[in-house]
Length: 261
Image (cartoon, rainbow, N blue to C red; front, top):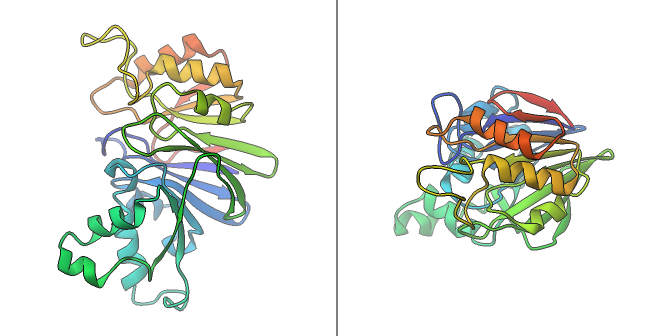
């Protein structure tokens, strides 16, 4: 497998990168994990959107799914789609509210929403706790994590290799269990462990750099990739925290970087 970072800025696009979005190549298949603000444009540097085999959305905050509207427009209105658009729908695996959430983002008015539910372009499949599915040439496992809304961490397995993506979460035993012995953990690290506002981060929202490292160590992963750093925090600080808690390879990802899994 190969992981390509489309965007990695937490809470929205930053000056150096779009929001969350990750392209995974698994043999001849391509899937994306989240498609936040700005990631659709970044994806087109690496892949024709018509070559995408599936989308997986960890949760439905805008910085993880906002560019789904643009993807719908691209696949619905492109003048020369490479297939019959009436019979080809893109699989989208996401929390159960995704059809309504994405339709509302695409068509803000009730009148417009009455005319489109996106089902001509997208085929929705609800993620669930402990769910396992074969998706785009991979085996995907899902676990609920601790965030402000329904949210999942995802484990993608192909060719004997494994990539786990945390999505957004606070400290969570489910993430450790899902990531057990994974080759790579792509993990959010959204804030320092100690700030002027707190002596320890608030629970149920995000992980600090230290907590990301602790989760990687507890799971026994081979490599830790840190992501989702907001533009108002210093990624170098979060990287240093993670290295203190995890003695394996640790790296802060950047937009357009690629990693062999």
